[in-house]
Every structure is written in structure tokens, then in C-alpha cells.
Figure 1: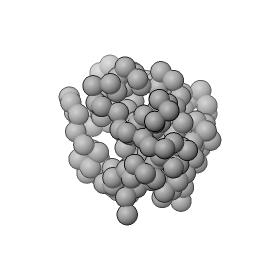
Figure 2: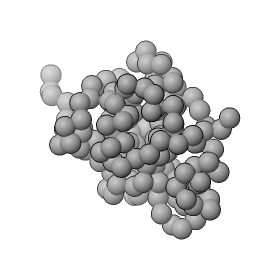
Figure 3: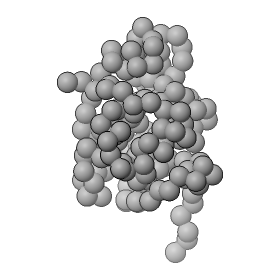
Figure 4: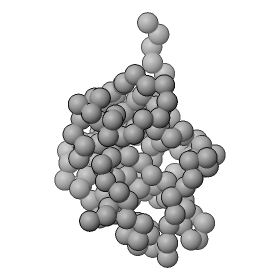
Length: 159
């Protein structure tokens, strides 16, 4: 069996000496994060999705939130000091990030965007995020991730 290729995200983690565990699942196309978490037996509260948004200023941002929650656009905008933010259209995702829907992660993108991680992750020893390809998740420390990408923790989900 051929060895799995490392993603840009994995190479970034290794270069920055951030320990991680890879988890793979069978999937040929996008499936939602809740389905991924259930498939892998991961708690929904510890499995985060990456959303990319564009601010009124034209800057792009990444927001990491639990897969079963919704991003509060007003809180998200406030967390990055923008008047407003709007989620990126799926058709623009690859051009902006280098990743496809379902494989998007805040690490190893074409350009490192300001990243905000929902505050519940701050209390977790580890959480799951996309590994940079559909069918791959990585488990790692939210604190070490935030340090490496200069991310911050803020309450950014709807109540």
C-alpha cells in the first residue's frame, strides 16, 4: 500500500515542531463536519471547521468553530476589528486559500490569514481540524496552533 502523502498543513506542523495525530476517513467528495466527526467517533465539541470570510476592508480571515455551531458574523467582525465580514463563496475558496471545501484548514494556505479560534477550544488539551485534504483530520493542541499561526481565541458563535 502506498504511503499517504503529507499535506501542506502536516508539513507546516512538522516544521514548527507541533505534535499532531492524523486520522483518515473514506470520502471522495465534501461531507459536512458533523458527519466527519461521527464517522471518526470524535466529539462534536472537539471537532472544528474552518470558515473563510472577507472583511469590509477586503482582507481575508479564518474562523475555527465547532462543527455543530454557526458563526456569528457580527462577533466574527468584531474579533478582527472589521465593520463586517461575509463568508467566502465556495467557488472562490480554492483561489484564495489553495484548499477545497471539506479540506480547508488555517495552516499551509497560500497566505497566512488572521485566524480566530472559538474560545471553547482554549480549554481543550487537543482538538480536531482538517488536515488539508478531504478525508484527513489532524488532532493537535489549540494553544500550540494559535501560537504558530498567531491566532487568537474569541467567542464567535451564535448564542
